[in-house]
Image 1 (cartoon, rainbow, N blue to C red):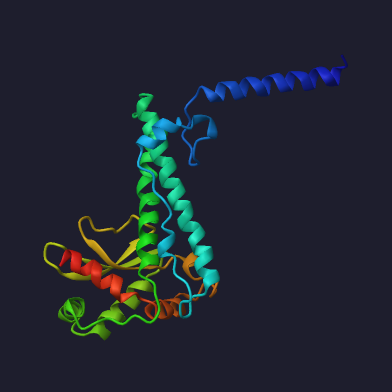
Image 2: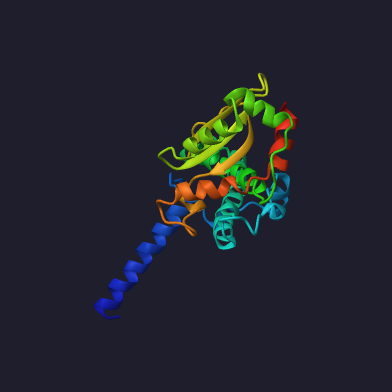
Length: 242
């Protein structure tokens, strides 16, 4: 065997040994675990699996193209997939007695981001539909009680939407006092108010409008969003907590 072939052969043996060692070691890293650590089909059935809610995908909106929605929808599908995979991996790590490991802590830390990313997108897509008007019922009266007029609420909601940073604007209802409030939630998890119920949800990450507008197009996007609020859904959400 030539010298070059011997060197190559030795390199291959070293790489194989490293790979085998890596399989037996826990690492802290951001990405999900590889396919070798999937659970059995029986264990997967024991874990509640989330499905993409195809029935809430909006279309033919005013000022928000179907191309924009389709591009955005793919991100929502990714959150559903990641939440399911996180649940599977956390369950597997617990069964392996690794609940105090660094990799378990990393998965648990990121769970709020992935889960809220899934749920907030579902609220968002569900409350989009053109041509639906707010009735003069209890929600409108509650808005007027808090802000003085519907127009005042609208301007406050728009101002919240222009908050610098990526995240969401949510019209919340406090189920205890029935008070309404507009809040900005950074990313998906920072600023969510425990116990408050989302009534109206608007995504203001750039991916919500970059297909139709450039990076500076948030203002125009918000104008379009306000023309596509499915007030029937929003009023039903409010009725459940008021």
